[in-house]
Length: 193
Image 1 (cartoon, rainbow, N blue to C red):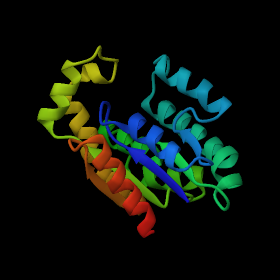
Image 2: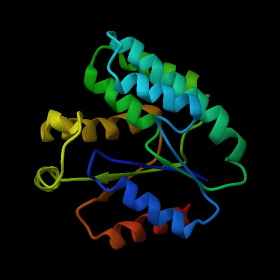
Image 3: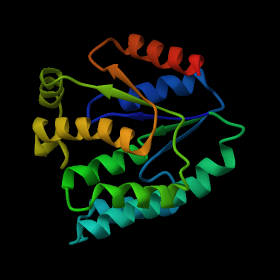
Image 4: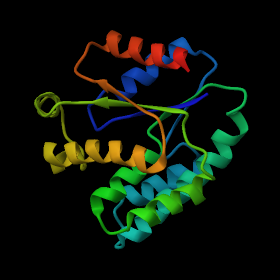
């Protein structure tokens, strides 16, 4: 089974992935972008902000996604539990926010890069504005977080739209619950599958 944990910064993705890894000891834990050797290089290129074109940045992420599917997902999807920190949904969400590439092109290019191989279930750890602002106030902010809570909440909404556009089942979980409650909800949804 191939699942992904989605959510904006501070939503608790890393915590939940670590707990899921404890429950599924043989699982492959991966991430997008940067889950492969080439993906790490692509991620560094994008984070360096050297690309002047948003189209170029989008294509770099698609290259990472194609490599991730080929190297990690395809060889393991039939025999292993795969748990991914983010997925194509995030890439589509960020592209939607930028508003420079038509939705049909975003979807078509993602289908091409992934061969339409998407997670069977995606869990969105959803934050309220109040909780997000509190969590951001408790840490040193990175470049994305410095864009502010409104921007991050736009991404959260775009994640929901992206899942619909790609036809991926999205399970929305209230990320303001206790860590244990969130884990239990994810595990219950996996068992239902």
